[in-house]
Length: 303
Length: 303
Image (tube, rainbow over all chains, first blue to last red; front, side, top):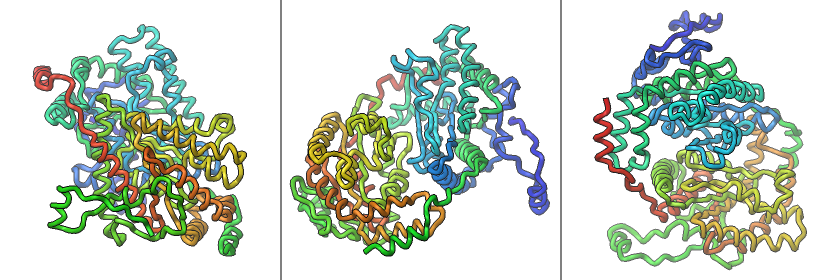
């Protein structure tokens, strides 16, 4: 069950709704993990479709339109950056193996102009990365001005796998939540809109997806025996996620829980979340910093 | 007029062709700038459609199919890299302002999985970049293993605008062609397939496209008065391109000239060139490095 946050309808939306239906809350309000609440993942249905289409065909049609809208507002964000706008967007994708992080990049980010995307998949830290504080490699991968950054895994691995596999002393681990919150607050202060998405799948759905990978030789490269080791630690991972969602869903950078057993809902929901955040920035094409009429005359006067 | 290089039909293709039509040469053979030939750009028709569809509707339909094929072989290249394959592809886009470098990224690269693309738009060098040898910033932006790199402008700017605007002494400039060839040979030795595309537009087409930008306030951000300064230097730029195409079309990294007045042909041609090069690599999904049957049993045995 996804908790619903009531949204006060505006006068305008109320008028419109009188003719149509009850006011529709923004998806970000439906999916946001409330600040300071403790989180019990078992209370969220991973097959739910809160606020979204109820079937695949409708979702796919909506996704195409969402993709066009996303590409449009992305171009305005980028254009605006050429005139001094320093705002950026960072989408953080986290979730268990097979939860659809890669699929989201392909099917959601695939609608954007790739020139304006900065995508980073965080793997097991290299020897060099391990020599640095855990946020070091994350800082190298941030989106530039006007760009949309996408993290496939992120600094949250440093309180997830690091916790479950006990890769750092518990005291250091405890400090990391605060470090992450301060880091993200700093990004927000710098004009980065952070959209953190937890892809929530069920234990059974993961089994089905891992089996599907094993059944298709073209997907064997996506499978690793360590996936089974991690799956055996499922309860510990869920607990680590609950802690991360609880301690790091802040006003500056809230977490969104996206039920992800249905891929079509997942793609629709993340597209919608991203679009809501981009629209809230309301980027606009900059006005010309030159004399348009004169430029036209010069162009026409050239031989 | 685009020069055609005759291709000897293989037995297999000849048999197939007996049933159908004359052997169709690969586009790479049609568009390649022959090694060591001097280049006269005025002899190439920028509205031509060599080897391609003759109308927009056919081209757009073909582009969709090409996009799917590209995404498929891209995934195999990436998958193969996870098993030790170190090959990569680098698409270099060069051309005058408005020739369609950005449009190519949007409409051709937009079909690929963005997770496997590394796109770099080279702008005016920063103060830090200027302190280094000209190839320094290019080396930072190369694609990783299994990735497809895309350069929107490149190290060729250092023999194009650098020549036309006399940014470096003529002697240093003369050395750069050899430096570029050695650099690219080194990349090829390292497993990088380099696809260098010159987008050939006419002087009149550029005027039309610049005017279109001026006529649409949403496109003013793409225009700069320096575009007119560069346009006034058109003959010098064409000469600089002729030299670069002549001196740097090598066996390791040939140049391809793509007539680009028609955007639909440009997108079709670059997609096709990219696909031909990717198919020539024939990447394949790696076989499992683990016991698939055992993994399946373990998965099913889990509670």
